[in-house]
Image (tube, rainbow, N blue to C red; front, side, top):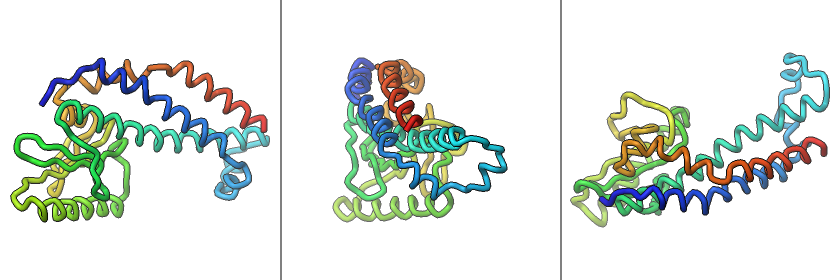
Length: 215
């Protein structure tokens, strides 16, 4: 393991955070009111006493933005986690379906499915993750029969005080970032780099938002 250089993390964030912000704008720009209205419950607007078209449009936009940003930023954080792990443990983005990250540590191969937060899926989706882990273990042991494999569901934020799930471990928030980096304080240290260029990018997003509302 190599100690993490926070300057490298800051450089990575500065160079790549624009991808997240641009995708936010692109998703908003491609939004079509007619298509979104078809997926909305008209009775809900009446129950909430929505009186004007502007209220409807803003409500739709805010719900759309919230849902999409969670997904987009989760994908972006996955890339950041893989980068950090590569710097410390030499990990790599996995080519196995359902597995995002692989790395070796203490004689074990860790296979990691990265999610945004702890409440990311229903029982069916969690079942699929377990199936993916089992398939990945079989695939890896085909080429390396003696490989000691540990499956991990890593969540970028939140908490889970019972990490041992039997078939896999679930590490959330601080525990996850410590697990992939060896730095127990990384969870806090990431806050400052993540603010890189945020004001400039959010100004651009607000301009796009305003144009969409007017349209």
